[in-house]
Amino acid sequence: MTKRLSLTGLLLLVAPLCAAQTAAPQSIDRNWLTVDTTAKTATFQLTAGLTQLNGGLNFNGFNDGKLTLTVPTSWTVVIHFTNHDTNLPHSAEVVDTTKPMPAGPVEPPAFARAMTARLMQGLAGGESDSLRFVANKAGAYMIFCAVPGHGLAGMWIRLKVSATEKRPTLATSTS
Image 1 (cartoon, rainbow, N blue to C red):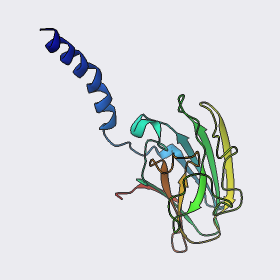
Image 2 (cartoon, one colour):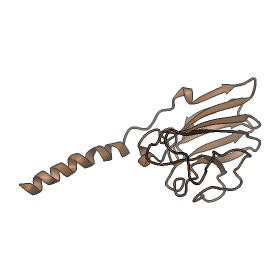
Image 3 (tube, rainbow, N blue to C red):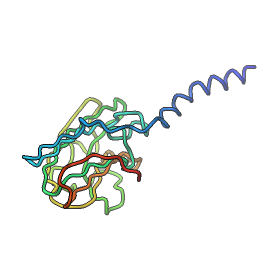
Image 4 (tube, rainbow, N blue to C red):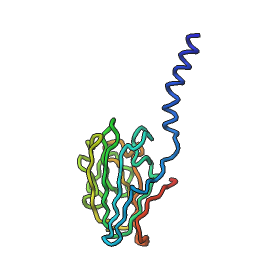
C-alpha cells in the first residue's frame, strides 16, 4: 500500500512538470514588433525566459529557431532585451548562422553593437539592456543567448536580413 501511495504522489509531482514542457506553442504578440517606415527602424521586444519552455531557456517563449524576425537590408534594428527569468542570467547577441552554434560569446557580433552588456555573465532576472544596429548585410543570423551553454541548449531565434522584403515581420518557423 505504501508503494502505491508513493508512486501516486510521485506522479502528482511530475505531471505538472511534464505538462509545462509540452504546453501549447507560444503565440506571437503583435506588440513585440513596432515598425517606423519613415525612419526605417524596426523595434523588437526580446524577453528571455518569458515562459518555462525549455527550462526557461527561450526568447519570447520560443527556442531552437522557432521564431524569425525579418528586417529589410539597411534598416535600423532596436532590440529592447529584458530577462524575465528569475532563476538564470541571460544575454543576447546577433551572430552569423554559417558558423557552428557557439558555446558562448562571439567576438565580434554579426553587426556592430548587436549585443547586450555582460554577454558571458548575463543579466539577472528583471534587468534589461538595448541593442541598436544597422542590418547592413543580407543573410541569415541568430539572436542567441551568449551565456555559456544556453545557446547550445536551444536558446536562440532567427534574424533574417532581406534585400527583397519591404517591411519587418515576425513569424513562427517550423525548423
